Amino acid sequence: MTTMPTRADFLLDPDLVYLNHGSFGGVPRVVQQEYERLQREMERNPVAWLQRGASGMLASARARVSQFVGAAADDVALFPNPTTAMNMVATSLQLQPGDEVLSTDHDYGAMHRTWRKRCADTGARYVRVPIPLPVTTPDDFVERVWAAVTPRTRVLFLDHITSATALVFPVHELCRRARAAGILAVVDGAHVPGQLPLNLATLECDIYTGALHKWVCAPKGCSFLYVRREQQPWLQPLVVSWGWESDQPTGSTFVDHHEWQGSRDLSPFLAAGAAIDFLASFDWPAVQANAHRLAVQTRARIDELTGLEPISPAGDDGPAGDDGPAAAGWQWLAQMAAVRLPLHIDVAEWKQRLLDEHRIEVPLHRWNDQPLLRVSFAAHNTAADADALVHALTGLIGTAERSTG
Image (cartoon, rainbow, N blue to C red):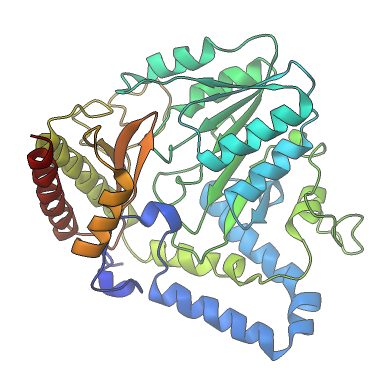
């Protein structure tokens, strides 16, 4: 086993400083090769592939994914992305007028729209708890969210790692409390697999979704949905197909109903094993620790440059994790960091200038009217990538200060 992959292991443009692995990932060469081999194999005899071979191949892929995330294979279904998986969950819920779905104001934009629409359609309320920045302690986060629970709360929906603010939320204790109170505990873990250790057997949630095409480096369109066994019967498929009243049941009605959606390219799912093998061929904890250090150091350098306050406590110099809110040395950051930028900037203009003038791909956006830059450090990133970003921002900030001075 070698320690670290290099940029050459990936297909990324060598002239691009790629600091946005968190959005759509990046596929290693060996995984892309397996993905394309699977597609070519399918086209040699599509009937044999889809009608006679797909069920067994999907079962094998699901078994690999389930083992990777610490769940039983019959409790996991493969989905193209977490948004699709969560839409199935949301539309299956029989919400009543006055029911409440509780979340935070750090929820992912697509999920915010999903829950808001579902609540509008049913007369329920989507309640978002404000979590101000900077965050302070895990205990404060847990109590702030739990204080918003009412007798009408039906669902607690949490991000494990937030998208806009790139924070690791302490979800274990809130899931435990929710289940004890008879509240459905649902977690959006899109960014977690490959970035943080994940063992669903010990996480007391009812439902969890994660992407494999982000930090696990699988092909685009490869994600999973985990559902605790006793919660599976009420879920209704978004697409009713041959898995409904299946002629060839897998042994899991949950898998039958939700995994098979008609003719589509199954290669992203089937290549998940190659992506997991890629991670296993390196010392992946060392990869994660190196990326974490780069994220922490880069955040500090940009904060020093802007003079603005970090959005989580400084000193996150150890590996991030989620062992519960009482865990000593809690880390709010994993391999991503969001940093404040001056209030007056045009985030769209700065994002485009970073790309056009410096060949840096990195997201800038406004969250609660605060301009943020989110930097991702993956296996292919080095300190030189961080240096390029800091250098570019130094010029942009200097230009902005002169124009406003």
